[in-house]
Amino acid sequence: MERAKEVGVRKVMGAEQRQLIRQFITEAACVNLAALLLAYALVGIALPGLNTLSGLSLNVGYILQSWFFALLLGLWITGTLLSGFYPALVLSSFKPLSIVKGKLKSSSGGNLLRKSLVMFQFTASVGLIAGTLIVFKQINFMLKGDIGMNIDQVLVIERPGIRQQGEQYGDAIQLFRNTLKESSSITSVSLSGTIPGKLREFKVTAKRYDAPADEKIIARINSMDYGFIDVFKMKLLAGRVFSEDFVADQDTSAVITASAARSLGFATPEEAIGQTITLPDFTNFIVMGVVNDYHQVSLKSPLEPTIFYCDLYGGEFYSIRIATSDMASTLSTVKTAWDKAFPGNPFDYFFLDDYFNEQYKNEQRFGLLFSTFAILAVVIGCIGLLGLSSYTAVQRTKEIGIRKVLGSTNTGIITLLSREYVMLIGIATLIAIPLIYLIMSQWIQNFTYHTEIGILEFIVAGGAVLFVALLTVSFQTLRAARANPVNSLRYE
Image (cartoon, rainbow, N blue to C red; front, top):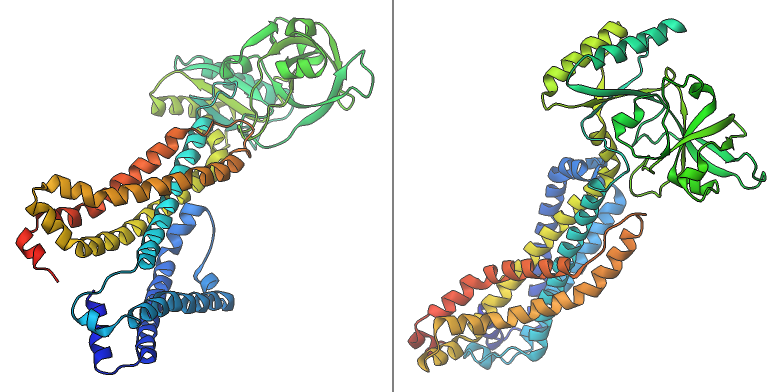
């Protein structure tokens, strides 16, 4: 309003429309240039944090390239024209006498533009908040999903790099197992070819012994010892697992998962017991047991059939189930046993649940980026809404005064002024729902196992934006409602 009066005075003093437009564009160019320089400096400062958040490795040299400067120049020119030319054209077209007398009325087109811009900002805010909720819902679904094994409280150590040969190495492994089993804080120990979360692929072709050659399947293969099932708490569906009571298990027997049994053509787990399966590139095995399916890798990928063979000494990873919360004491016990069995080897360990969940690091980073952009969108939207609410309060000053003289309460005035913003956010939410639903539906299909997108995410997003928006305009609406009606009626 003050700027409009300035334009009116200048027009009365003989300023031409072309001069006014040139002045507005010059001012807009200076403001946009200052904003670009500030943003450029902030990018340089924030780059390390962005790299940490996104997992990228950008450096300052990346924003010193010629194409980036060309992009900045384009943004500067576009921003200058959008923020300078249109306001200059509108204000310079008003009659100067009306402006000076304070009788300037905003056009319906101008009001529509302001409301549309604010509504666009809040559509983006609602969409980004809803998207953030969906991303973290999917991440939580995967982190808490049942992978078919219990990997909590499992300590893993990779096999020693320096080791004895032949029977001496076998004796060292047995010594390590026996020493650990003496501790009450350790319930079971296992040596296996791979562990859940290890992306190393061991796959073979397999078929039933009596099946045609073209009925082969592709299955994962893994070695296990006698303690594997106890460590990972898998369920035995039929038959038995490997046992030291059956020495021949190491050469002749296999344990398969339920999906492997189905893929091989067995109608039930019980039907597979005692049957011979052929691994053309490996050997023949007699199926001794069928266990539940498990996810070797994350829930982003489908289940795969797995075949286990018995190997007591050739595995790659020691998995140790811990039954106590006193980790310091237990780690000391394990280290002592390790140093005793494998002297000269470093004691490097990790916990299996942390290792397995590393597979979801990219999704977690994506969620953090999404939430960061959502917060920025809300802040920008609130700034726009603050300007709109200030303008609306000024435009309706006399109306507010008249309503107070006629008996309206402060609550009634606040409700009157806030109703418009509630409507804008309601429309923004309705626009955001189908858009973000389509986008996130496509994203969530990248996961074989995923959660469902519900209406709750959109309700929470709309409610959060509405709360923040009303908090933003509360100062303006409260000040307008508490203003002296006499002063309001005298306002020009």
